[in-house]
Length: 373
Image (cartoon, rainbow, N blue to C red; front, side):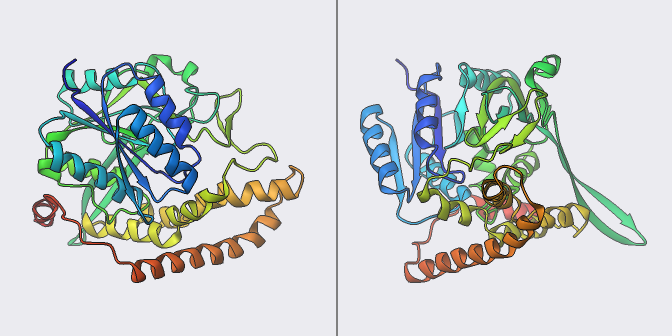
């Protein structure tokens, strides 16, 4: 067989316990040739041993960090390896997170879209929850920057809206066709390798949120096009999330806690910590010279929201035998935030004790120079 033209870079999103299901899905439900680079971010011993065994069995490249890094940094570890070791070997790179389950035909359809349209970036129809591939999480959307002049003052504002979010697949079949879009998400994203010669690596200032928006801005800035290939289907967030008959996402509608393992919690708390969220939003604002407007105020209000949804609400429902209690939620929020700050302080102390070696930012300096102009 000829050398695959696609390399997958798999890495963490927010937990480790989904690793095996996602990896098995990739190998069982992908009928298009690929090579895999798996970035293991300091996973606990059972996951580490599983990945080591699978890397030998399936012959994929396993890269491991001995401390936690952000999902963006993890993607760059895999991307840097490919660019340094096999820059001209792969026409496409696919970023895929470790909680994604794929539907047969997904990769062939992403590649076909890129080949037929010349797209720099292609994203699949990303669904959410169980049953698989039934409720839409993201199908691309609008994301652009507008410039306004008012009373002699110039301001720049970001506009963003998602397409088909929360819709049942069965109810919008007529809209599930290939469509040019402004952005797709990093749950699963195919990228033409040559675009990195213009954008450089992913921007690691985007630690926890809006990293897909930033990268798609970078691609658009260089003249690349972005497509949502809605016939390619993957699903994220399959642990602890169910969908109701109307096709709307029901976040832990029962009294059950999400299926976290104890070893998931530290990275989950770090991944969604307030400091990373705020730093990401401020970096996006400053990098693209955006005004501190309603968009950012709305995002600030959502800082910590995923921890609230996936930790506090399920715990409250367990404690109240499924009834829920807004009063109890409000009492637990400051406690959880105190714990979150403690986790982040501990992480920062680890960084001070064991500083990471400097990493080259391949091509990023030239890109940032173009943006500043």
